[in-house]
Image 1 (spheres, rainbow, N blue to C red):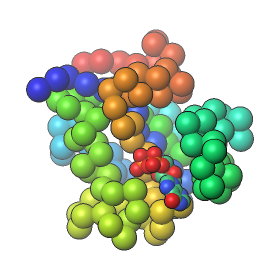
Image 2: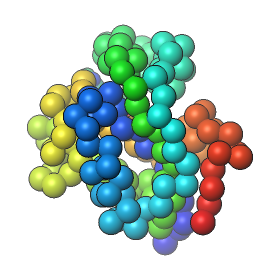
Image 3: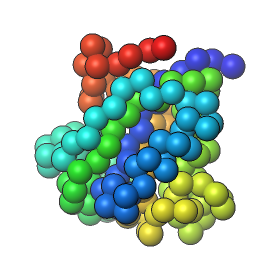
Length: 141
Ligand code: IDP
């Protein structure tokens, strides 16, 4: 078991559905601690930079438009195997394939508007946390 951090984003659709607290509660019940948190309306440049790895994909423009369609809530989560633990809570990228009881099964409408983002590896988590948070904004405990 490794103590890890992961970067999590509650996307505009889930913020609009007023389920921020419900999602935070799932993190806490799973043993993940919120060690950094902010609400933000991303600029186009920030969203494009964050998803730069997908810039050649056909869904890139739609993804960026969606991510800037409203405010998001961004958090760093810390816990044992946090990357995988958080991805288990999120469920599959396509909510139609997400296991019952996962965040995407419960709150996402489509693969485009799929409620949450989570880092896919500990290395990417470090990069993604650094993208949104200064070291002084992260509070390990
Ligand atoms: P993840 O968010 O489950 O890690 P990724 O493959 O990293 O999934 O894709 C990033 C985001 O891009 C997804 O959460 C989803 O919103 C969007 N996306 C991925 N694949 C598709 C697709 O085939 N069509 C439309 N949007 C997609």
